[in-house]
Length: 311
Image 1 (cartoon, rainbow, N blue to C red):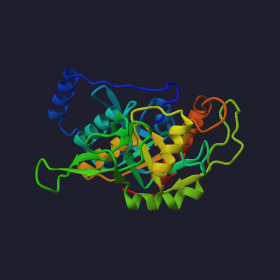
Image 2: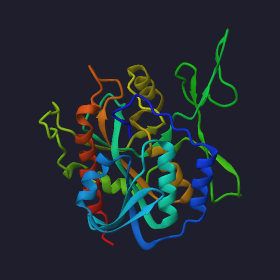
Image 3: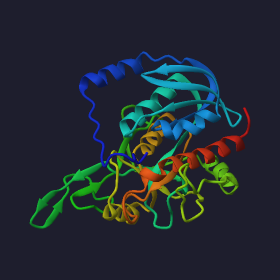
């Protein structure tokens, strides 16, 4: 998600914490063999409406996270919170893949709007996601910024030069890394999302009767980008639009996409715009509209799950 309450989050994982997490993953055993869809959100308000609509049959606590098993939209599901940030999202996604027989992964939550043609409350369903804040911080020389090694694939923002991510490909020689920026969402899932996009009634007003001046809409396709920072800066937003043509930016989805790609599990992400990442007038919109946006995303996810073939 693009977290509404802080300007930035820095998450540092020490060696001891890594050892504990890795040991836990190594010892992991599948605890459920029902083919399920994993439905993930970063924080509780994003998952609230989805959990309320789920017929929960059991729960499991794994690595400090409650997993809700049941049915949603007629589909066997497991719901879980990832926590904020790329690191938490990656750990949660891998734990779900290790413990459950996943048919696919669905992420639902809020994001910052980048595309100037989109507005708060709109729901984006990007066709691909990239990790846009894996960067080279360049040396300041008399001739300008000089990035060491890689870092010239995309236009820079000052000293920051984005670069592609590296992932292990299980279909190639062991331990061989490939460089990749975009990680595609599942094409069949996108087609279902496109079919239901015009059928969902989205909220225009909050519970306290703060209303948007427009009717929100669902946009399927385009790009999304993720990184470990909350963005509330008009210049950076403009650069993200010009460089990546991103409809939305958040703090988790690309990490989910990378883990899903490496494990060959289909994924799709629904992200409703809670704010304009610094592009709106006045104060950041997320404090007012984050719950409206979260509920709009959830509404589209429920319609999407209902439209899938029943299992």
